[in-house]
Length: 142
Image 1 (tube, rainbow, N blue to C red):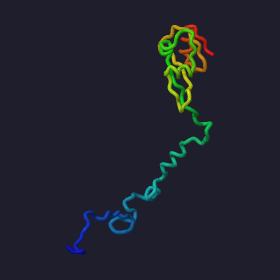
Image 2: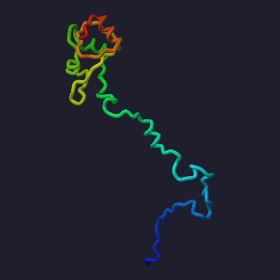
Image 3: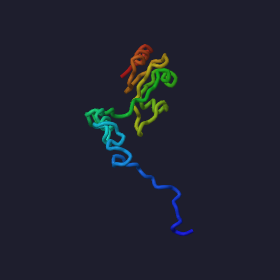
């Protein structure tokens, strides 16, 4: 074997250049005249995406903070005794809700299930059905 006998395992990739004479004509297989015969698309897709984004910028237009943790009324009925205080701290201590970034999260009470005991609620968010069930059972919301 000598140097002039060496060959590559793979051939060079050649890109077929069009519009340079030869087998393809001056329109180069692109159809007729107009904007579509040129190399770039009529309107870039990225521009369409940019135009769809709202113009309002800044922190005040974006939702701030995590969504509140949810607790059902049935869970409160099982875990707490009558007359106890229900707050985000007490729910965290009883391991019903988890901390978010080292802080006690906001808690929303949902009306799933039933409650028969009267409890005192502080610093909680209530759904309409949960508020009805809690007041019907004799609980106080502050």
